Length: 123
Image 1: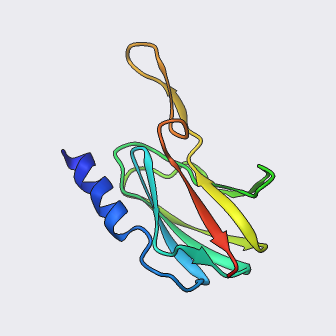
Image 2: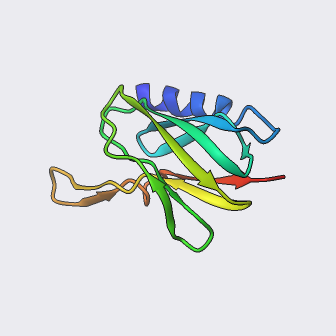
């Protein structure tokens, strides 16, 4: 139930700004990524990355070619970090790339479970 409430809050408040921003808060939780800005300005951008989940997560920023532009280290539950990144105009994907083995031996891929979102840079 707690996860559903957090996900609902992320959906309801995840993209609150319509004008491109120079900074954003990126919230990570189990199998969802929310951002405080729907679009970012080209150039230097500061991302405050908060882990509101129960498990460790990362933030990986990739460009349209799938190239990694920036990434955080593992962010523990309740922790946050700032990631400064220089972004060109275009579309970027924010993802968590954690993969772990569950107690029943199945691999759980955070990306495949939905921890990804597209972000526009520029107008």
